[in-house]
Length: 217
Image (cartoon, rainbow, N blue to C red; front, side, top):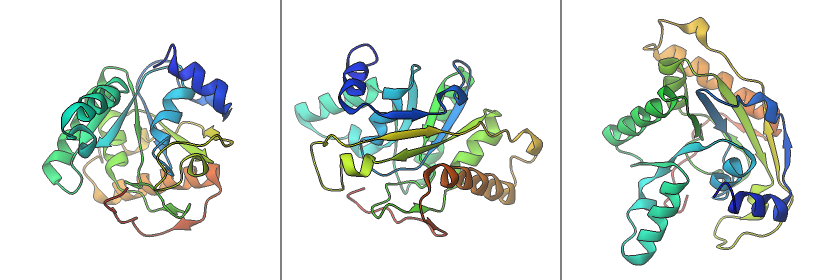
């Protein structure tokens, strides 16, 4: 994926990448991004030289037959971690796996909105990103993806060639909250700060409510 597919993808789509120097070349880092299309899962690893792990809905890993084998190989190769949405224990286990990735000095990407925005607006973030950041002490780099919804609009199978911009913001440090990782109020504060940073980078309209989890998302 890194040696062959990523260079081809960059040559075809020629994404505009801004602020790449804000992403540490090594060591634990959390990439918190807006989410507009399925191809977001491919675009972020495509423009970064290091391996990136994501949370991915468990349905991608549960498809039967040969198609399922290929999908599991594809998403597993990309470093995706399956999570069963709507199931508390499964979600907690997935977050624990994310913490393990960071403990090994890896890069972990997360969409705080929880699912794709189908109208292009930025929705309120879930607090999982704050829990991970506070538990691990890893810096959070806000990411804005622009144009990926035009590459692959909702319901479209094959992606189109359209301009893409990826903006990486300055790392956010939450060490000032050391010792307060169990506070739900701090979780909300940290999450809102991360979402505001994404908003500043993306220029999207903000919606102060959670995006529902449609079956198609």
